[in-house]
Length: 123
Image (cartoon, rainbow, N blue to C red; front, side, top):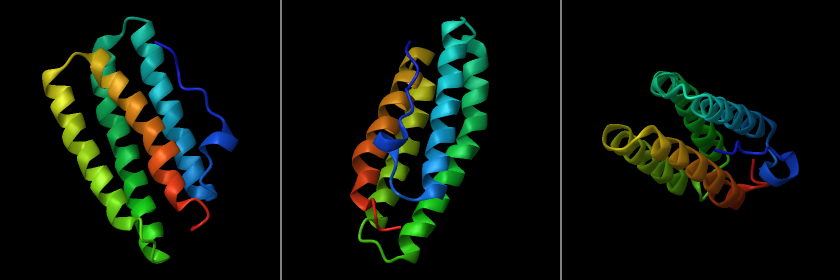
């Protein structure tokens, strides 16, 4: 499985706090991919739980910043974050680790590049 290649220009939403958090999230996902590629599937589930705190913290910061500037995208972000949690829990329970990693890779890259770009320049 290929790691996500971080590109500051591509992934930047124009806010240093959010951009740094996104970069750290991509680094965490790439660590999970590296574990998977080494055959350490048992460690991945444990580490997903630990990265969950990082992801949740990011969601809180992002929502607070959007709310603070009165962004019209705040509700959509909250809804996307809630849907992420529900889908991730379902995938963790019902699917193999491969599917969990594919979900993380797909969701985070699409969320940053599509959803978060809607508020680029607002923060």
